[in-house]
Length: 297
Image 1 (cartoon, one colour):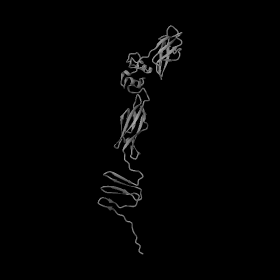
Image 2 (cartoon, rainbow, N blue to C red):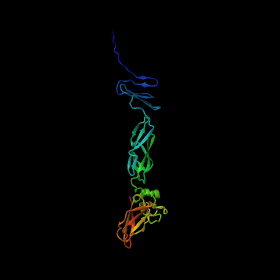
Image 3 (cartoon, one colour):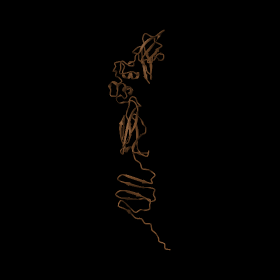
Image 4 (cartoon, helix red, strand yellow):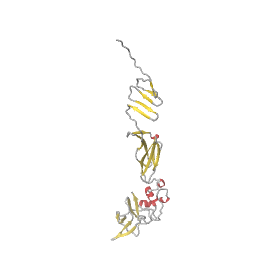
């Protein structure tokens, strides 16, 4: 019997449309190219990649991962509620057609503000401005042809820090309610546009209407009346009164006395909803001067 040894041989293949270089048995793979395509193939590996320039196509054979399209961009934030003056890190994710997401570096996103009192840095850090009430804001991010938006809420944590109204002792929301957005000089604490003799700071603490002289809660009044059958007592009657406030009766025998004293008084009673009464149990002497101290809680 005649035995002839056979040798495995390989060579290039070609046609009018393509050319494939000689295959080798290895784990590194080789690339074959033509004017129409590129092919990376490897014998012994689990996958290969083929691409075509026009129209752009990519085939991944045997890969565990799958091909995907990117139909949108989703924005996220460390918190959807950010306190005024605080910062909030925004993030962006490509939304894939496989119902999954691919994280994008925040510095790669073009950030902008659609609305609301915030600013956004190139690193995606949102900084909240001052507000007089909880205020919505909208952030926008764009990347690789897709745009996403994100709604945030700037939380009012300090009611006396809003623009020109800041630090004047009056709640910002009260000033905006009655005087509108600042600047408005008539909203200042010493102003009294109704001529009632009670300035805005007093009206804020007392719960009064600072702009309508005819309103039922426009002026705080105090009346002194005798108590029937009690010659040494006096009733101090004062409207209007409101929840969230403490009313303390103080007196002194002379106006030029150094201090006001709480003296001897019974507790506050309320009649007709908005009228308060405190009784002085020791209304003796030829004269006595009273005032009501109002504290807003």
